[in-house]
Length: 114
Image (cartoon, rainbow, N blue to C red; front, side):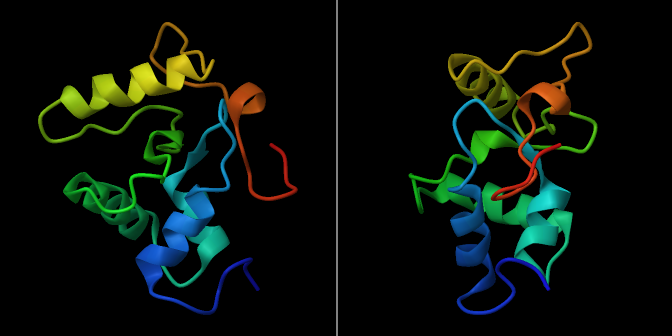
């Protein structure tokens, strides 16, 4: 059983989980999918992309990255720079290969650790 496997539209459940990621921490699309249940990493990506329409501006979308510890490519490339800048403002560091160390900055879920 997952933490949020019942109740509410899928995107709203995804956004509720992403809101729990503390500043200075990151998690993956796949981990959010596992925690929410009933969806895939790709669906979480679609939900994050839908935020560009101005819905739910309080969702810290920048804290969701890919399983390699990298920022996923956004359509125009500007989103990548914005995401990295937001994460760096929160204290998240990137290595020389543009990766985030999950052992330092990872969030595995409420009450969980990497």
